[in-house]
Length: 371
Image 1: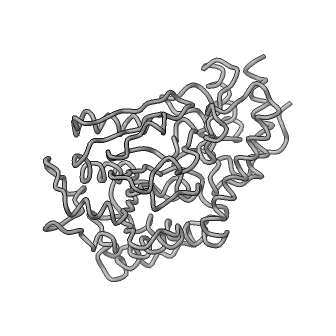
Image 2 (image 1 turned 90 degrees about the vertical axis):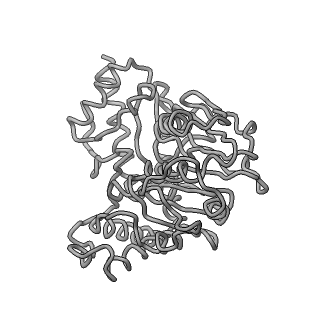
């Protein structure tokens, strides 16, 4: 018989992720709707997005925050096209999105002095082999593999190159050494459960120096331009966006930031995500038919938790369909390019009680497909 208790919220997608507990769209502050994003009220809201992000994350002095087009993809592409080419590049690849950045560096920018340091799904590349005389491009958390870098100890303080970090499923959920990261990118629809299409770009003073001292040899599309007359476009980092953002999405993100502060800001978000992971860790520990895709426990993601099963790809697909039909868990199949398995979001917008309710359903669904 199936379990009797279901999660109150069956949304466990790894993007767009679950909205925060208690979310009510009618409670958003919507006085910016119908107004220009360049009006005083529009600029104030967008400026608040930048300043509140910096405050809640605890960014070092001198780090700049901007809202940019194209979600996390737009933000990391913007950084790569504007900053890379001055030095050689080391790019770390261990899952789908890091492979995308590798392809863009190799096939689109065609940078000749590029070294790809690669690992299979479930593993990390050899971090000790990274050459920090080069610029280094990497994801902090492999969203499609459930493998994260455990810390920033492998990044030296005295590096010559820049570090460009795609942090979209890590930021607001993991401790990050800001002073070792020169570019950080993410999108609203991940850890804070915001809406899609908008990216966030964070630059260190070292990255700004590069922008003002280096001009790439290729044409720069308007949506990638961060400088004017050789100097940083300061207005971009005060809410004067390159193109028109959705002010409804801006209000939604500001609501998420307010909620984050109400549960303890960054420390509260991290603790909640880690407690969510603990639910799955406890389940995996007592069930030999399910395991983490990550080969090293120190690298198991506490947001996009990827699991492998003693089951065929077709059986896993049937499990996912069963759980969807029962309105128990939506969108938890592994990413299309990843090994067959489950991917369960454990960021802070998910409640531990819902994960506890989900675990017996995994056992039930597994039994159904293995019968």
